[in-house]
Image (cartoon, rainbow, N blue to C red):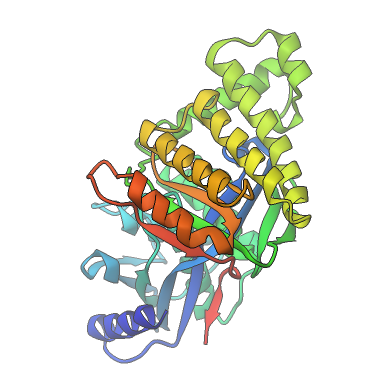
Length: 386
């Protein structure tokens, strides 16, 4: 993270002169299993990963917020927290910053002005939650200006509200809660109804490998919100608050058909897979974990229909290599909301070199290049940087 720290320090000084009062960080996340279950009040099993957003902050004596985004050619934004916060004329990253601050204000916080410099190394469009990381980091920074440390669950819910109501992306709470509350060296089993979390230790010697398909996602412009609406329609027909409350027997008895049937079947079976996966991971049973990951990917491909051919190809390639080179100890699946992005794989550390070499040999992105591959570990959630 030395490069992030150096770029952040230089970027802050160039934009605002002087030094910040403090620095906060919020990691990205990879979801090991449990896709499109969070907004159905179900279960998910993500972990935070070492790529992150950092914000250097300095309190101001007024109510003006000035922001510089170092990753976006030092683009800037400025607005007043004492006035109604509207969408930025140019949208983009500015709206995520404004969304989080507007949500804090709407919930009754009296905020102070601040100078904020933002830097990050989360690949955008890879399904690793760069937007949630930014929202959580902004919340930490604005509350740090007030001398406060946020409650992890509360800041995650506020970040979700920001994305739902201001940005217009009807996501669940998984990404934000994983960024805010994850535990080092563990996956985080999240009950998305109660928001209870339980750390599931990742067995020593197990590698988390993230492979970018090269297909960049765009969920707001894509079909994510439509999938959510289809899930809500299925729950309405079944007479349950959310699909978390449904069963396969209920689905069969209700006579659901077409897309609504398929969406409901994915969510119900995916919830079951998450619980089974948490048990398998806690028992160091990578063989069962691999089977569950393969079943999850097939369900997202066939029932939820959020994969794309290149992602299917990459997941199959990774899974086959793990089966051959790691004796089936592990597996692979698409991770994130879909329509592109990355594949996540679990495998013994001893197999990483051979498996990743095989992926680079066998898979090419749409641009004809070898894929970007990250070998990650599970890190702690958001907080201050010393």
